[in-house]
Length: 407
Image (cartoon, rainbow, N blue to C red):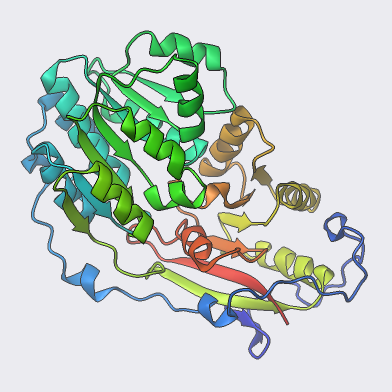
C-alpha cells in the first residue's frame, strides 16, 4: 500500500519518471507553474490510518434476521440476499420500528441504514393491509433511486409498489403513478414540494414518515421544505429520522416532529475507521494531472471514485481521463437523471473504472467495492470530506482515500 506526500516521495508509482505532454484540456488556460489550490482545511486532517473501532469490536449483535417478526415472504426475500446477521443499526433499530416507536438512527455511512428502515416498514404495510402509505425523503436523486431499488428487492412477491418522485424525470408519469395510491412514495424534497403545490400529491394517508440522510438534507438547504412537508402530515404517524450526525438543527427538528423517539447511535467516529487516509502534495496543475494518471495506472486502483469541485471541471476531467485511455464516467448536476443513472450503473458493474463526481454523489450512495476515493479538488468543508471518503471502506472492507494538496 502506497502513501504520498512530499517528504516520503511517491512509492509504488508506475512510470513516474515518464515524460508527459505539457498540454492538458483540464488546465483552463493556466500558466505552467501556477498554483491553484485552496487551503481551507488543514491537510493534517486528511491523514489517518485505518483501525478497528473499539466500540465496533465490543458491540455484540443480539439478533439474527430470522429472529425478527417478519412475514414469511419478507423472510424469503431477505434470505435470497444471503442476509443472516444484521448490522448494529439494523440490530437495534428494527425492533423499535416494529414496535411502532419513533426512531432517531445515528450511524456512519455504509452501515445498512436503508434496510434498517425499509424491512420493518415493508412488514408493517403488508400486515396492516390498509391504504396508509409511507413517505421517504432523501436529499438526492441518486439516493432516492437507490432506496427504490432496495424496496423492489425486499418487497418482491408482496404485492406492494412504490413511486419514485425526483427531478429530472417525467413529472406527468409521476402524477399518473401517484393516482394509483402507491404504498411507498420515495421522493426528493424539491419534487415533492412541486407536486404538493400542484395539488397532485396528498399526504393525508401517510402513516409512516422517513427522513434519510437528515444532516445532508439540511446542508443542502431543504430545511423549510422538510418543515412544510412534515406540517402537512397526519398528527398520528410513525416518524423515523436517520442521519450520520446530530446537529443542533436536527435536534430541533426531531423535538418538533418526533414523539418520545428511541435514539439509536452506532456512530463510531468522525471519519471511517476502515479508511486509510493520506495526502498527495503537488505544485502545478500539470503535476496534479501527471500524478493522477500515475495513480490510476497502478493495478490496485481497481474502482476509483474521483471528486471534483465544479460540474464543468468534473466533466472536463472525465473527458480527459477517457482520452488518456481510462474508462471514466461522470455524474453532476448538468446530467439528466437517465445519464446519471447510466453512469452509476457503468461504475457499479465495473464497465467504468473511474467515476468522477461532484458532491452530489458524496452521500448515501451504496457503491460496492470502491477501492479508492481521490479528492482531486479539496472539499469545501471537513464534513463534506467525511461523506466523500465514506464511499470506500464500507462494511468490514478497508479502503483508501487520497487528497491532493498544494506543495
